[in-house]
Length: 410
Ligand code: NDP
Ligand code: MG
Image 1: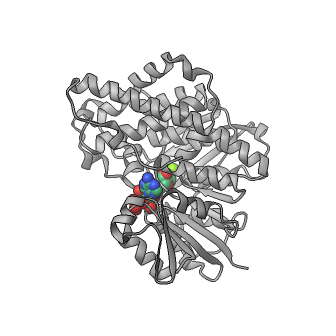
Image 2: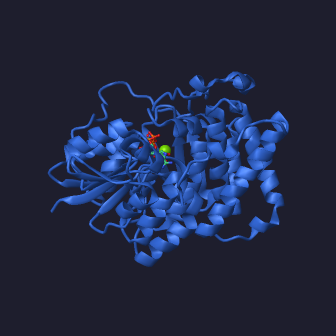
Image 3: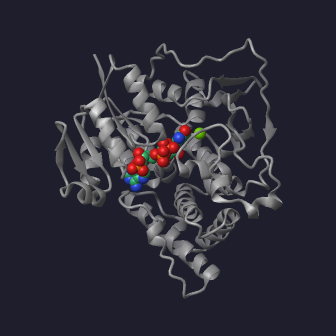
């Protein structure tokens, strides 16, 4: 029987790879739902090609401006908009699995909805796991489900840990390509432009994750993601620079043996494995070629250089309130950088000051993670960044932080 799947964020980079899987395995997959945020042209092309049961444009205003309606029928496919539309897909039990490939905190509401509705979640959206890891884990436990990771490192660990006892694991190693500035002296970081930061050496991805890879906040989010997904202590999580990005991650068992997962750097593989889990399907993607010289390099992570990663460990150890704060803050800072309001180096400078300010606010120290509290933490990130921007530009600036926060998200 065919698997019914939906792809949230179908117009993005992971979305495109997921659609490729639907095409290759068209005899086994039935694509029933897709979403975009604003990218109507690509979205309509996907509808023409795949004819899903329904489709959603998350940004209701964009939908209305374009079609002068909040629901329409296009090419016999119903198109809905906004949060209600997203809710419709995430609650549809006809889905065997839903891929969350939305970028940023906008993916949080769908991840929670999917988990609440007891539908299998294949999650590329690491931000939702970082913001609501404890809540998602509670929901999964209640429903006897696991989140299936798509992030390449976590997909590797997920498969390496299969049928193993967590007590036998001494360490996990998350590999990092090093990003575009691995060889650039930190003294030169104040000259980094937006274009420099958007050039990733190995992966072609959306803008937000590309900037996160340059600051190493991406690896910061990934250590938190690993902690929530695998229930593994931060003391056991290590990060290594591996510029070839061929080893996707490793585990070390108590006896000192290391097990690594190697493969071509193609996101299609973790997506395919998530969709068909636990089955591993045959495919025709590029294979590893051992007939050519192959070198695999590893460098220890420089935590003094990549402060965003050090801050991630600090926040991770403080718990879910701080991991959510780290994520919300990072998203705001990335948007401010991409809009030329702060420089690249100011991302980590603002993060450091913001964590200090957040720690001083006792209202948050003992908070548990609920939907309501997540909203409060997000608001607090906004208030703190506003304060820091005022310090930078003075009280008369016209920068409105809310403009840099994404719309519907919880
Ligand atoms: P992209 O920016 O390429 O795509 C993001 C998708 O989410 C698009 O469909 C976009 O719609 C949609 N979207 C953006 N903002 C919103 C919003 N506010 N509400 C609803 N939908 C929204 O990102 P990527 O595909 O690179 O990344 C997606 C997720 O996967 C991220 O969480 C990332 O960290 C993770 N990931 C990505 C990897 C990669 O190789 N790209 C690898 C590992 C993890 P629109 O097209 O209209 O903007
Ligand atoms: Mg990754």
